[in-house]
Length: 344
Ligand SMILES: Cc1cc2nc3c(=O)[nH]c(=O)nc-3n(C[C@H](O)[C@H](O)[C@H](O)COP(=O)(O)OP(=O)(O)OC[C@H]3O[C@@H](n4cnc5c(N)ncnc54)[C@H](O)[C@@H]3O)c2cc1C
Image (cartoon, rainbow, N blue to C red; front, side, top):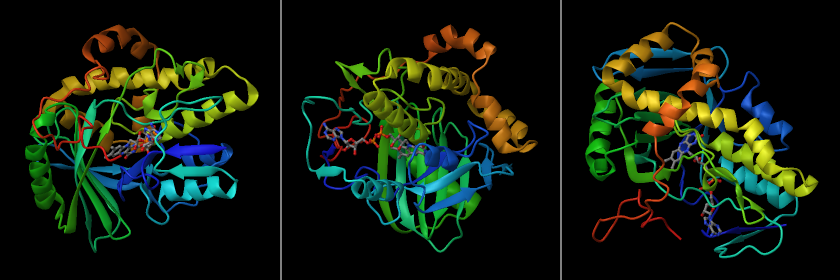
């Protein structure tokens, strides 16, 4: 088996980014799920049970859960990162990985998984070094991250601070500066060796996940959490579904619709609601979650339900993927949301 990767290293676009592998959508732990799918879990990880979220007025709300809410992992080519450890597993199984190999056409059986194709959200900020203990913090404030959230993650002496915004992309530098300043005030953020980093997220409910006869997996197909962009688990799950369909000749379309479809639709409804909340609404939601186990709270929030099915037409009317709008009207573009600057 051959994997073509257009970049020169695994996970090139992430470069040591810290991300959360969500553990709230199922009762079963996500690491058990990965192991059941045959994937290694030997990557560096920090089980996150406690953190703090701030509202726009600087009020802190504890986030607590008995079981891990998510596992913080490193992305990119670094040692022990999710990407590197999965690559090692693939190589050990005899997979040939061709770096610097941009696939223009796929002949014969194979899976397409080329990542996001448009920017429905962007997460922009810095990577940095720090002496602080591992932990996570977030801020829900429209003036820092329009319709999204700002976050700070620290693991093993490395940190990521980002504004994850769903609109206002052309003001990204303003939102990033405000985000850094807010974390300085609220959480005592200090960055050493700060390096700018950012990336895009692309969300849409796929009409079909076949390109010709080839199954499409991950964000290229639209498999993403439209609410907040926790796409890793969906990318892994859809990749495994696609691979199984190639191996056993099963119906990939039917399988994703059954196993992932209801969650994708629920996340679109959640996005439409969240996008309408504003700062007062975020404050209300933060108060609600602070009184409960955060994992249980998020499980209910993400769960497909009859009410969410009823709200789907309204949500679709409010939420539109920018998938068709890949253009950019910047002169000498250096922004990341339009993908002009995505490294090849
Ligand atoms: C800044 C940021 C923070 C994030 N934080 C989180 C988080 O906390 N939790 C979470 O769950 N998710 C998070 N996500 C989302 C998550 O990273 C993605 O959903 C996930 O990586 C998608 O995986 P993928 O395999 O579909 O695409 P990718 O990870 O983008 O992989 C696609 C690969 O295909 C390669 N490629 C593209 N075109 C070609 C071609 N023609 N030929 C060969 N190779 C090609 C690319 O170089 C790339 O390496 C974040 C995303 C960003 C940008």
